[in-house]
Amino acid sequence: MARIKEMNLGEVAPDAKPPVCKIMDFGKFKYQQKKKEHKAKLKQHQIVVKEIRVRPKTDKHDLDFKIKTARNFLTRGDKVQVNMLFRGREMMHINLGMGVMKSIAEALSDLAKVERPPIQEGRRMVMLLVARK
Image (cartoon, rainbow, N blue to C red):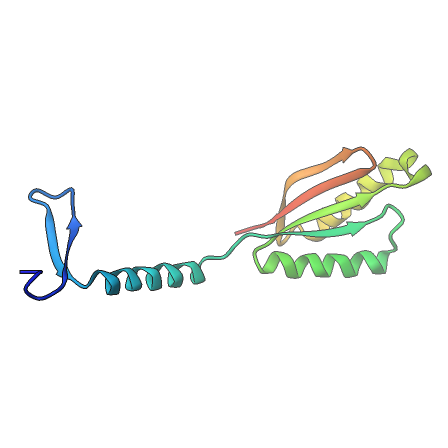
């Protein structure tokens, strides 16, 4: 029947008993499947890790501005990684950096939770924040 209509015979449900086949135009079928996959891909949201860099001596106003930026990232559903870089003698005052990290976490506590607490990695301290549902 498929040859008479100059079309293809496609297997729709190979696991069914008996297997189900359909007379169709295979090129058109592949095109429709590709379109369906493309539409599904448009609807999904990729989680992106955004980075904010601060220093232990970052001023209050600058810190507020960076917190505001992080708030925008979190409302979009992205993760925020807060990086703090220590230079020279700042390495002696890691406790100041820890205080700044805690203040950032407290300022964003209504919108985010800490996925990875502040961890010292050489000259850098890293904290990861994730938006609450």
